[in-house]
Image 1: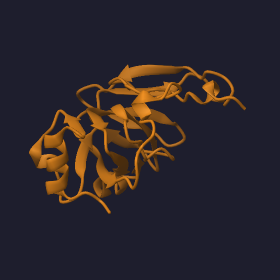
Image 2 (image 1 turned 90 degrees about the horizontal axis):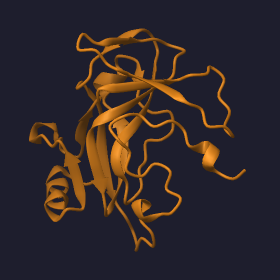
Image 3 (image 1 turned 30 degrees about the vertical axis):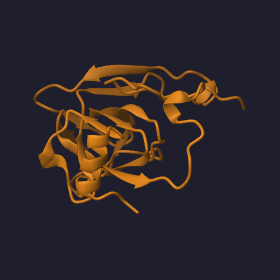
Image 4 (image 1 turned 90 degrees about the vertical axis):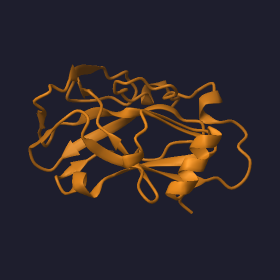
Length: 178
């Protein structure tokens, strides 16, 4: 079951869902539109190693926009800071974004109950496309949880992506034991 617009508003009133900045015009019938933040990043090395800390280089999207190219993996970030304290948030692309050939996540579209922060986007494109900070980039949908939560994400000792800032965050796979 996905929360409706009225249920999202009720949960925001209760404080179990937070979206900043919030714009009522971005609330759909069962989703909330999120926008591209000002920062992008790319990995410094073309070959990545899952056991190593792969560093990224940040750059700000200029006002006149920035062209993304295929075969380059970009990390972006949502303009919106969100919190979900009682629901599972999912980030999906908008159809308008997809019709431009922009994928906003490779595999990480699901958040956890207790996720608080800006969403890092895993951006790839099918052909060159010019993007702009502040453009609609995706939509959040919220699912209720069945049962009690023992430890929320923002309370876990090993939560690698808690309190994400307004800049993209690189993979923290290297912190795992394997």
